[in-house]
Length: 123
Image (cartoon, rainbow, N blue to C red; front, side, top):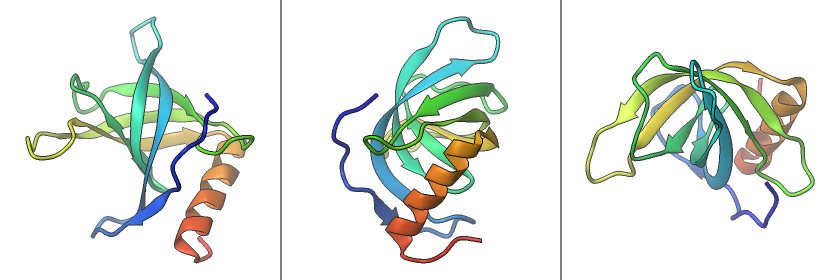
């Protein structure tokens, strides 16, 4: 999933984890569905990600995902669960995914991305 990605930027919010706005393709497989879909990553945090889609899955849906946000960097793979759905028509449609598992390479890559963007060490 290479290609030049836009520079990530920190998104301010009251959420538990700071979010980084960025764009990348995410390979997603939903529980109980055999086919793999390519969806658009909108933002990323230490605890999860937001995927843009006009057809979000119901809250509680489990999924597996795989993506890379930097050329030549590690692949972030794992599983998650849909925790919320964006219903505000003035915002991009999609679903918020909470990480339930990340591969070790993905944990390292996520930490690097978040530290580089925030300029602060992560716990």
